Amino acid sequence: MGQGKKQQITIKGKSEPSAANPHYYLENGYVVFTEAYHLERGSCCGSGCRHCPYKKKRH
Image (cartoon, rainbow, N blue to C red; front, side, top):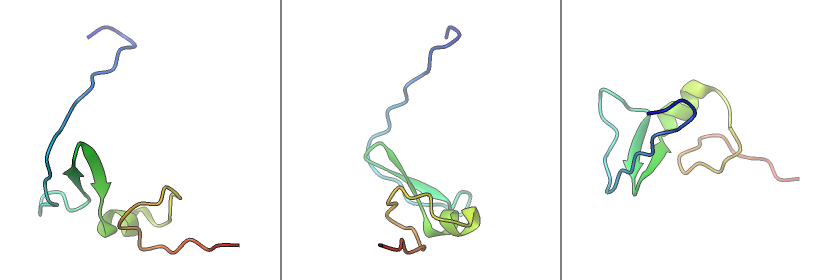
């Protein structure tokens, strides 16, 4: 692969979090972060993640 080019990886189907990596699973080609990942991260990123344990305040 040449410099400046990125490799695209396509992952289909679904996998579940494993004991080896409890922080994410794959679903339809997307990485889905688990609640454990968000708690370790320490704050909400504001992306509307499915398993976010932090509640976004509405003003």
